[in-house]
Amino acid sequence: MSIVERKHQLNPLQKSFWNDLFDRELAWPSLLRDGEMLPAINIKESENQYDLDLAVPGYKKDDFNVSIEKGILTIKAEVKEEKEEKKDGYSRKEFSYRSFERNFALPDHVNEDSVQSKYENGLLHIILPKISKEVDVEKRKNISIS
Image (tube, rainbow, N blue to C red):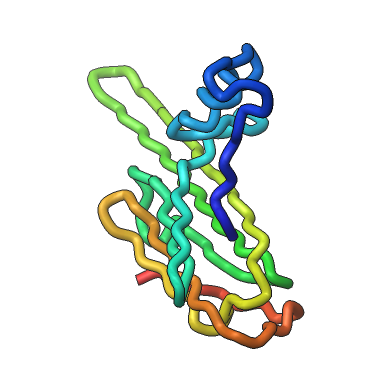
């Protein structure tokens, strides 16, 4: 994994309509895909690991499912809420549903057996340790969130 930088080809001081549009889109805190909001993510690479931080306020630890299958890291969350109020001859029923799914292709040098995750204060932090040898991509591993 590496950070992708956009460079203007002709004149770095001149911005076109398309570059301005895409630069603004990448700065949004969440992305819109098929009507669903995707949480913003930061990916940082160090010598020994990759750190992924997802901004997901309003969720609980049990709402997440983080897994790795065939070299793909999948992060899913789903929340269903229902409220019913009966008072003074009327009733009100409200419900909401939120979900998202993000998938990331992992490099071959990630140690899938040592992946860790932690959810705290609206931030899901995932640590992907590196190894020097290639990993069997046919494995599937669920990752517990602490």
